[in-house]
Structures are given as C-alpha cells and as structure tokens.
Length: 270
Ligand SMILES: [Zn+2]
Image (cartoon, rainbow, N blue to C red):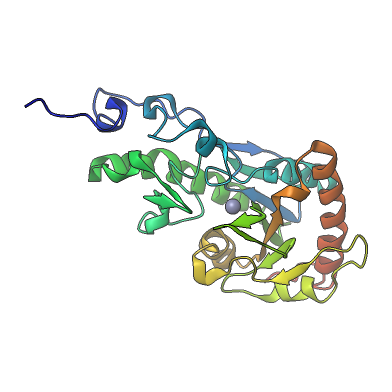
C-alpha cells in the first residue's frame, strides 16, 4: 500500500534541501535622539515563510488572531512617532514561532491555538525546531537587546504592544484594555493608578491574560535584567481595526504612559 501523505510536502522537508528562506523575521524602526521608551510588538505579522506552505491551515485561520495581533503594529507605529521611540516588531506569524515565548515553552511553536490544530507544527523534527529558534527567535531577541544596548543611557521603559480577540472560545470579553506585568509590577500598577477618564475604556490589570499564562517573556527576559521599567499593553482588536482607530488609541496611550513615567523621575528606572 502506498504511503498516504497527510501533510503538505513542504512541512516534511523543512530542514532539508539547503538554506531555507525565512524572509525578514524582525524589523527595527530606529529613533534618533535620546529615547526614554523602547516599543516592542512581537505579534505584528501573520506572514508565513513560503517554504512552509499553508502550514495545513485555511486562509481564514492564517489571517485570524491566532496568527498575529491585528491592529497592534499600527498602534505601536503611531506611538513610536508620537514619543520618538524605537520600535522592534516581528516579521513572522506567531504560529511559526511566537517571539514572546522562550524556545522551551510549548507555545513557542504551538500545536494548537484556540480551536485550531496547527498541522505543520505537529511533525517537526528537533532539527526543524532548532532551525526556527535560530532563524526567528534569536534574531528577534538580538534586535531587542541591540536597541536596549544602543539607547541604554536614556532608556527608562519598555512597552510591548499587543491585541486580543473580542470573542475567545465563543465567549465575549468585556475588558477593552489590559495592563499586564511580569516580575516587575511597578509600571503596570502605576498606570492603573492614573487611568485617563476620557475616553472611557474597560481597563483591567493582568487581563485578559497574565504572566501566569507565559505572556511576560520579553519583559522578563529583556527589560527586567536591564533594570528597565516595563509593561505589556493589550488592546481589544475591535477597537483598532482602522488606521484612524489605531492613531486614536496611540494618542490615548502615549500621554498616559508619559504621565506615568514622569512619576518615576529622571532615570528612575533603576
Ligand atoms: Zn500578542
């Protein structure tokens, strides 16, 4: 009997056939001057490198929130412009490698995301997993640490920008903005103490996720050891569907962050 090929050939030969083209896996929008804030957007892109084919997923799944954070990059780029901050953003779908997870985390190359199985991730060899770590996670973390090193004298704060789906496992989420922290809760708690009154958003600490869900990796691995204040901002993605909405959200977040940062004083990060 012939062997039945269940999965696309490309997923079976990921580490074969010489050099694989992952494309641009990380982008750095640089900033002049002496920035106080470094912005990071790990889930900015839903791009899947061509050699991985469709990863066994429908087009709908490949473009849905399981593959990336819709709207988050637009918000982060608007914020970067408003506060003259450098921005590091991912160039590959988190289904290929989730740059907010360490290589040993099950979610780094997920087998399942919400209701979707990720067929291409089920058959990976150790070499293929290592290849994704070396070609996606490693350059991403180098880009972040490079920006920290370059701007260390003026840098006080790292902000990671994310979006979340309004409906998760069929349940509507009422929270609109989540302010999350990892090991260092100082900035998140300070932000919650000065939430702007207008416009009014349902804003909660450590919702809809928390560090217990493994979402604070970049904060804890990059900001914390360098003595930077840090916070993760989660925006419900139905609030940031258009460029105008993304700009409005950035214009809401930046003065709030600035005001919170001023409470720590100059160089107050250490
Ligand atoms: Zn995210």
